[in-house]
Image 1: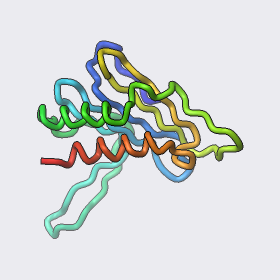
Image 2 (image 1 turned 90 degrees about the vertical axis):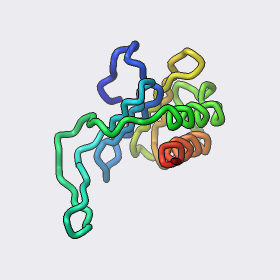
Image 3 (image 1 turned 60 degrees about the horizontal axis):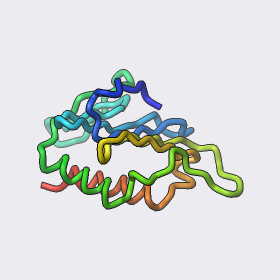
Length: 143
């Protein structure tokens, strides 16, 4: 897992993916007060010609524009709709799972902190987890 903030840090939602042989760690952290961070080792920008440029940066949590209360409410709604509070602390599979990456989710729901690990990510991605990630992405894109 990424370097964890203190328990009282006010995180609404965090996802952190590591261990993939083809990709750098990545993550998303949303705070209850609207702060928003991304774990990355690259910054993207658009140059004067409209071309997307990438610039390497030290891997870590980088601030992003804050989220408004409506976006945070949509994320909370996505957590409730996904029944994320019932996610196991670690997802298990029968049979052999490839050793790819690990996705760790951490979020606040109904006053309790939930942490759920998904080993062999994304090869054995549970449908519920994929749906939650999609819903959070959609919640952040909505106006």
